[in-house]
Length: 280
Image 1 (tube, rainbow, N blue to C red):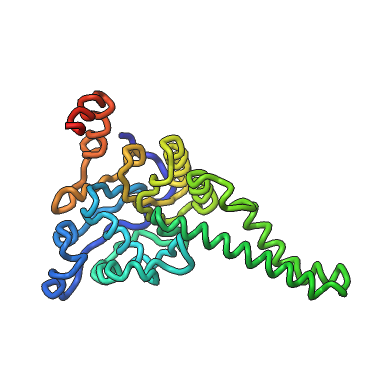
Image 2 (image 1 turned 90 degrees about the horizontal axis):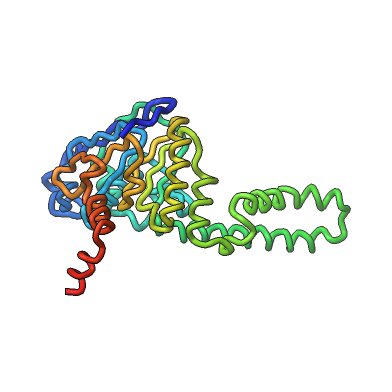
């Protein structure tokens, strides 16, 4: 595939396992995962890198550890990935990693598909707090001038309006896929570093193509994406560096040599043959 031109080089060049007490950690998860145990230096020097492999192969675990080591904010909740209580094992791995940077910016985030539900709930809680605050202030300033009320309530109203402009007045009004895509539209910015774990989970094929279109634009403006995915569509990003976790050590593969692409293509070519086998 042809590389996509972009302004500025990828930010994160590589990740290397450098744990000084490797022998003492080998028997502990996640160091027992074969691809993690065999990890040396993984080349990430491309605008888009994809981790691909079967469930349990270690791709999500390594992605999470990189997000922690890079101190990325978690898009699914307030705070950084390293503060996520569900990532305690990945925190151990992150301490064994050295990241090599070409450049860094303070833009970007880490996102797991399942965390988006947490983000939606966070939006609903924050909106409810704004509405409750405005109602309380209406009572408190009932006997004050319109000018005084506007000065006091203006910042809260502005914050609520900004939230609704970006995500809608009712976060539940959109379908999950629509809300997920809107999240990307609002949060992806140039020169950011974005680590995503299976972002296709909530997206139809058409919306996956819409995400690819966003990635094209952002890569042209210096953004970098590292994505753990099962999606042949996302894997098809031109020039993407694809790392297969189905091999030990992790191996770089071409798009049309990934098991996901080959299986999907073969199934679409003759679905009845596969269905006959499934039925026994």
